[in-house]
Image 1: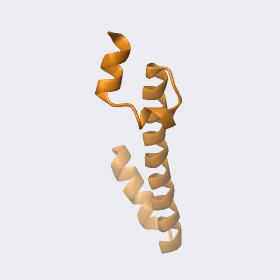
Image 2: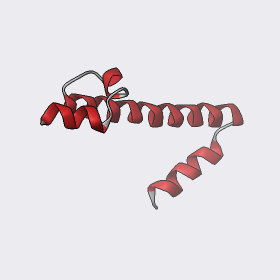
Image 3: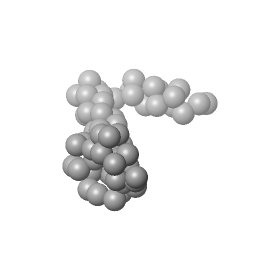
Length: 65
């Protein structure tokens, strides 16, 4: 059985409120994954993730010239 089918089988057995909790947790994991990616990209640029939001390509081009 595929992972998706296993997930759906378990999901259907849960009460509605637990299904909502599982959905909320999945959304949390997705949002955390996005933050992790931003932090990794920022480390490549040499700064914290909050700085990466304000860097554009012109800034980067000036830094490497």
